[in-house]
Length: 290
Ligand code: NDP
Image 1 (cartoon, rainbow, N blue to C red):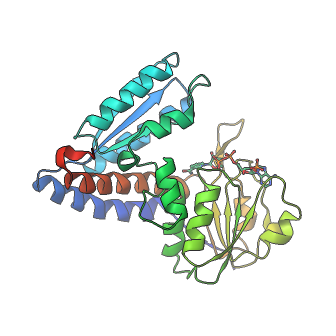
Image 2 (tube, rainbow, N blue to C red):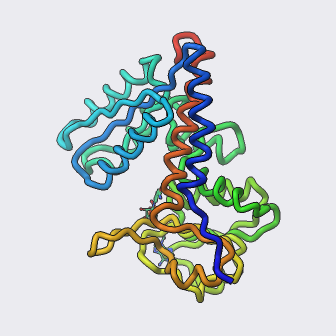
């Protein structure tokens, strides 16, 4: 039987509708959540991601600002800008769009953001809290993936989840989140042997590699929930995922399309983190922790 398509756009729309009401209520209480995105350089994909984030903020009433900086900016100047935003009580969330030019250390930049404004969930404090199961800003893509899986009605408890990819942004945190939901998690990467043998055991298969169409129906356990995180631009300009959507949808239980699957959920979780950040900071003197 053909899979049910997991329409990330639709799910995101309904979550964003709830968030619009919440932002409206916060504004009535004098609190306007604010997100500042810093964009360095001219990478076209980064530009389009930032535009989408700005638009999403505006749609639900979050105050958004984009600081565009030249690719030649020094790391010092960037860190000074972040520090100004750290001190600004109207800015509740700070996001530096990655990747950065090679002369700037991503690590130093991420660490410069106050953990309570780190709405991307990349700061070592937030990552550490996630690992030890304490309250943290969850990284947006992994959080969105777990929300999408839950919307299928699939109980994660005791399920076998196989994650392909072990990046800090997607693979590792999604594996942790799935484990926290009591799934049994297998992580695969470029050195994994017998990939197909492992993926065929998956009740839930999360593919986050960045290689167009690398997963076919031979990798998939019939009825599995297949989450395709990959975004690959073909020479034709078309965006495709890591999964051969047309053939895998014939045997999977649920499958996300690319585009329109994980992507809209990522932005939605960013909005959610920004609202949470604003609420938490509103309880603090001057909006920031000393
Ligand atoms: P990375 O390049 O950081 O990580 C890719 C991972 O895939 C690595 O762990 C790598 O293994 C593994 N890998 C590479 N080749 C193979 C292989 N043949 N078999 C098994 N594993 C392999 O990518 P990201 O995690 O940052 O992103 C993954 C994809 O998701 C990209 O297409 C990206 O554009 C997309 N993405 C989409 C988002 C969205 O919102 N929709 C958000 C973030 C990312 P190893 O560690 O051994 O090198």
